[in-house]
Amino acid sequence: MLRDGSGKIASVGRAHNQEGVEYLYTSLKQVYKKSFVPLEEYCHFADFFSPVMSDNDIEAKPFVLLIGQYSVGKTSFINHLLGCTKF
Image (cartoon, rainbow, N blue to C red):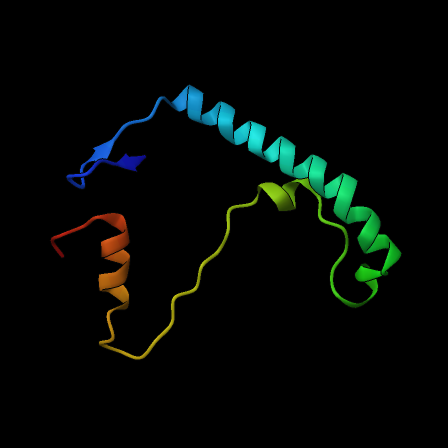
């Protein structure tokens, strides 16, 4: 979903968007396996941090944590990102 200038949600072709996402994941996996995995193995990265990432790790949705004291605008910030004007 994209927002146009007025803040309304403009629809994007799902099939076209999905092709772009698949291409992005495939490209990321190739770059990681070709460039980063050899470096991680050379430096023994898995011994002190985490093992080599799997394809599922690359495709996983990110988690975001928003913390702060009460009444500082956390909900307002999320509503702004989502384009909500009414609570």
